[in-house]
Structures are given as structure tokens and as C-alpha cells.
Image (cartoon, rainbow, N blue to C red; front, side, top):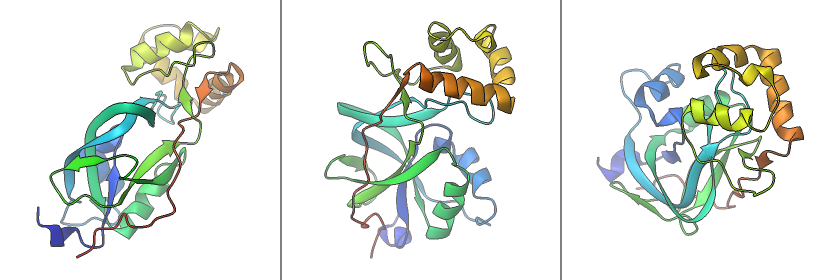
Length: 204
């Protein structure tokens, strides 16, 4: 991948479904025609993936990043144009796209590494134990549902993971469980903050 082909694009580091080229392509279908956004494997320091403290529209407990000193997150980054990032922002109503500094979070990639990169951070916080403050690492839906079921007396969490996810896809049920997560103090701060720099765009 030539460096000049990335000019004018921003590196967006994916956590969760956006790491799938097929998912990203579907989300960007309104602006992407014959080409696909350049994607590259990246390793980001001092980041880890957990679960967002909310239920998604599809009934899942989605992924979300958080600050984890010493950790290294291996994932995928996409080099997106301004139009593409605007479209992706629209598909992520439960997340804020933050600009993080590679000085704070060093990035290893096979392409040029910019001074900053974008990352979607949950507006709801991340799942963490109310007593130990230990963050729940990203795992299967079964493990996330079991973890919640051990802490919340909600009948919607009973049964096989597939059944629970179908149940949680109902908006009233999703809203109730998301509210229960907050009221039970199971939502922790991701402890990530945007940098004031705007050098996330690759330049010639």
C-alpha cells in the first residue's frame, strides 16, 4: 500500500464488528462505489477491548475499547475519507469518535503511522464489576450474558444466548436492561479522552 494513496485519509482503529471488511463495506455503501477503503492490521498500545454497558439494536452486548496501561490491542484499522468517516459516525449512535495520540498509544502498522488516530468509544461506558472495578474483557455473547445474569435479576437474561439476544432486540427490553446496568453501577469509564491535535489525516 503506497503512502501517497492514503493522502487525505484518517486512520480509524476498529473494535468489534467494524474490523470486518464486509461489515465496513456495508456501512459505507452509500459513499463507496467500486473501491474499498484501505484496511491494515494494527497493534495499539495501552488499549484493550471490553463490552459496552448497553444493549445494541440487534440485541447484543457490543464491544468497546478502554484504557489499559501496558496492554496491546491487535485489531484492524481503516483509512477513511472525510465522507466515509461521516457515514460511519451516523451508524454509531452509541459511540463517540475520539482522536487519540500515537504518542500516548503507540501504533504498529504496515503503513505510515499518523500522529493521531480515530477510535469509537462507548457513550455508555464499559462493563465492569461494581465491587472490584475489574473490567469485563471482550468475549462471547454467552459469557457477557452470563456475567450480567449473575448480577442482574432480569428474566430477559435467562436461556440460551441466541434466545436472549432475540429477546434483547426488542427496544423496550433493551432500554430496560441498559438502564439496569447503569443503576447497578456496572458501567465504568473507559478513561479515554480526545487529543486536541487534528493530525490524524495522512499527508503527502
